[in-house]
Image (cartoon, rainbow, N blue to C red):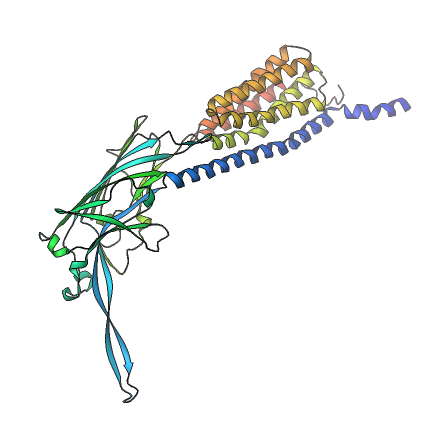
Length: 452
């Protein structure tokens, strides 16, 4: 009786239930270093964003184009009541001030060639930057002051100018001149309180003299260094935009979709056209006092980097719990089926080896491609675990099976990471198959026998 009592703690600790509990608890504990790996990925991702932002500050940010717009001053009158202190009578005093009317073009056309710059690299990070050669032309129809209820006598025709609002002024790389009919004018940068746009404006001209034929044709070109995106405001009564680029992963954004009939995307680049009419948007062709904020009507293209190595690393790390759990399950089933004793310390070493996969993955990815890094990290970790298994299992048959199983698991996860639309479907089918295999191989285990 005393002998049985003395052996009870040892028998209890060797029971299948306690082993399952210990392995399960170890799996949960290993979530702590896995969380540190996630923090490392996010930290490296934020570092990349800082570097990219620093580079784009120097090279050029997003290009957002709003113009050209004709600006014409006029006299505005206000009435003020004035009380005579002597007669105690009130009289109306008419005061005049200068305000401005703004007119959008009848036709607005743009053709832009966007060329990616692959040489701009800071440290280990590549940046999505480009050079854009943009050509504009179109015309203004007769300016309709009647709609604005402005009398002809109050218009200062000889002080008209042309305005363009755009971002990224410091990265314009060409002379800024515009041809209005047969006359050439220079753009000058204006210091206006606008947190989003910079303002370019020509010297003043006599609109009536310049637009003697009632229409005012314009044409100009700009060269930009930019990054991330190019967008436009469809201010023309008819707006036509044509974009050509050698960038192979565009994302078309904004209120208006590109013409599907002419849109093409290939490994060599993309081409996209837009044609937008005034009936497609709900703002007028003329405005008073200030140029309205029409950013909600913007459209264009975003040049995206489809291979975001940190996003792929983050997705891979989210499957860490699954990899650790399945690996421990394989070892546990081998232990139970073949009556092999595996110490909890050995499980810990296996778990840490699996965690090391993710640190290797992110470190190698920063200096190569994600696919190559995934191959190197997975082969290294699987090789380490197989060699360690030979020493603890004292056989080559089971380590070979473990190596094949881990290869299947890592391949399965890689496929899921690469998929987008079908990731959930493939993942669910894969997990269903894994569950079926576990049920099959564990069906003959006598779980009622608590001792080995």
